[in-house]
Length: 296
Image (tube, rainbow, N blue to C red; front, top):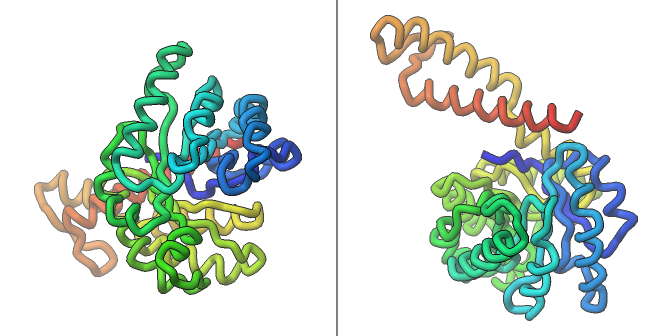
């Protein structure tokens, strides 16, 4: 599974921000051609992506873009501009259902073939940020083999729901849970919404932890100060990793090797589901370690 603890969003028309981005340590760098770019700057954003997209991955980050949604009339021109060598993935905003994903997949495949790029290399992520998007997310996540992530958009979601966006995020629980479950069912990363109050690190940490408990394994980042906190929360806790190592060793040596399906570890019985959970923790820790190593 992809490691996307931090997905740093930058306006694709800002050369100053783009040049600095690879030094900040994010897992994913997304050049945003949508909300962060005013209408008259859309073409500038496309040219900036073409100029700098290869540079975004020099320090181990993945290089992504967020295009404009299908309802804008800008999507086709965006896709034609960004399907080039060096691009790792495209995020589609305001995904309403599986047809939105299939249409994007078709266009990307067609351009990869025409431009001599490896077919299937460019991955996709979808932003779920409307009521209809939440209702259809269970179908959308299975609409393309290119999909690696499902991202929640809280600002547009709360606007669509006619409710107030809060730091506590009680108004987002249903949508976050639905996205977390859908992502897990499809084997994708659930990525949480951006947290606008970037100076309130305590609230950001609390909000991120609550999302992690709903299945999120990363989030959109709008300020570099949020990266370290996100990495800490979305990386396996060292104590849990040590526990998983002990459980795995005991179950394999005292259980499996001796024909038993349960063994005691520190006063608790460990059976097959607990063992599998421990193995999953170790696998995730290995993925995170490999990602961090690629940045050094």
